[in-house]
Length: 243
Image (cartoon, rainbow, N blue to C red; front, side, top):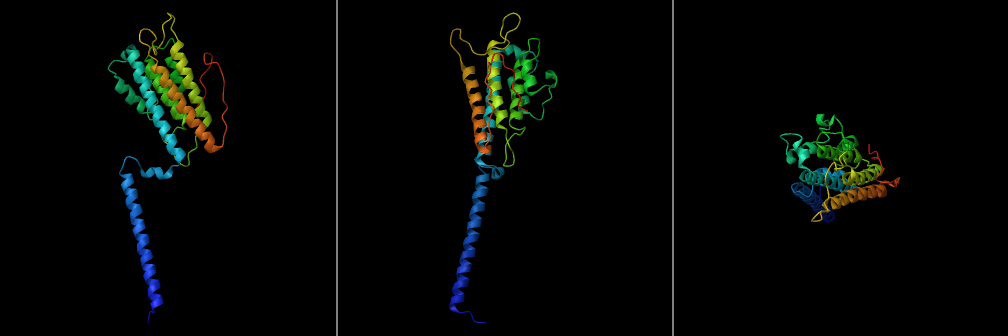
């Protein structure tokens, strides 16, 4: 069988094209493996949209902010930590980080989310109010994000729940500043205006509220949904449902 020059040229071009595809494939594989080995990329992110990645960032941020709030509350209210002998702030944070695996804390009567938050403001509660509030906030956020530690393409977040969680944070901030016991003492100390003014709690709550409002607006834009924006007196408001 004879192969003319035209045929040879075609085979040569085809061969070059095959080699080119192979080189491209190898290059892409190397790039993926290299990216996966770095901290900036994980292979699971292939199953995430840009909005999912942004949602994950907001989940991490709000959990970090809750941890920061808990640490600040323990510093201002060391008596709360002392109610449970042997506990440290680090141990308390680790217990909260176990959510949602360990939602059932016997010292909270098995309560989580909003019910745990209510314990923190119950005048008759004798347990660790800071821990109750931290577990409650963590549980509420977990429900607000669809009971998922991270978001993937097939997941669907409810912007109303995220919006409600922001309003609930506003209620928490108000109750911390105003809820008192029968003797007129605040149940938990936060900002101080005596001597050196300290409004760090106020700034932290502002960041937490903005975090939840922002992600709720992002999800509204993605899902083409609306939010029932509730305007109420924070002083008289009840916590809004998130799950």
